[in-house]
Length: 388
Image 1 (cartoon, one colour):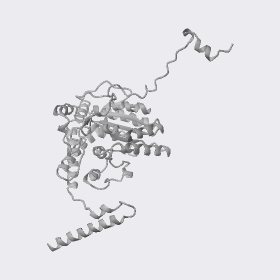
Image 2 (tube, one colour):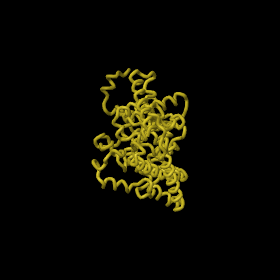
Image 3 (cartoon, helix red, strand yellow):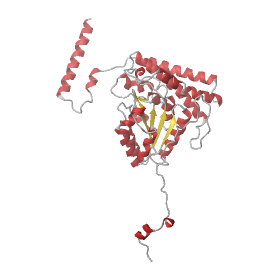
Image 4 (cartoon, rainbow, N blue to C red):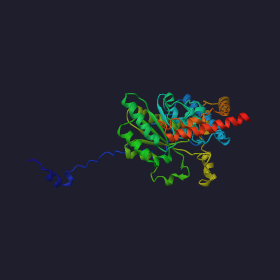
């Protein structure tokens, strides 16, 4: 006798077989707690097979670039106070994220930075003066993006998320194994471009790593006013993107997690979202007064989690660093800062009339009139200097 669907529905509970569907989010969810391989005092924590520790020589180079990066950051902040830069967003305290991220990718991969990634760009090997050109007030970035596979630093929040998705998709479409690394601040995850970029990347399996540096404040807005999610890493689940959260002041963990994320993307498995829990020690920029929205006790607590000291302690205990090596790296950092000071003290040659270049393909009558006004004013000023 043929069993009808109605007969199946009327069958007794004993004859039914309950099948539990697989949880589609299981493989997408981040760890409940941020991945950590070093304690705050620099002692090692139990090893993890899913996030193997990078080789000792890589960790030593990570330390060297972090020290140089911090000295660069301090020097750039001083240059801003001297009027040599128009603005500078410091990334002091975020050295593990800035340097660990660029060490996880190849030179042929593309990096999409925000305005705060100056340290990451010099760690990538880009000329520091070229990095600071944009922040000096020039109308374009100082380096050639195609030469260094690094997009211009992005001031609008989250637009780089869409750019990274598009480039990664295009590279994959042409059969290249290029990975795009997009830096994001916690505030940028509240912008539409973040969601559009990660959704596009997920649908087309674009090889992008979205790296969120959660430094707890979007200028003055605390994280609690930005999201109700358990952590920003959980935002990947809604788009079908695997994610992870990591202690952003643990350099070993940051590099280990990002290495795995990059490998995931390069293998054609689509995008990966990483959230690093870190802290911005300095104000948002030199124009910000951070004391208006956070107190000194909070800053002091994070100072005790210094990523540079944390890695140095660990590498000394392993015999990878000693006093001589630490002193040598510190000397390199001072020489690097001295050269930067010398070069930044040279006045750039600027043509005021270039202000009118590339505004329109064909200059409008109004633009031509304004340019001639400026030309006349410059000529008059030169004539007065000659008479003097």
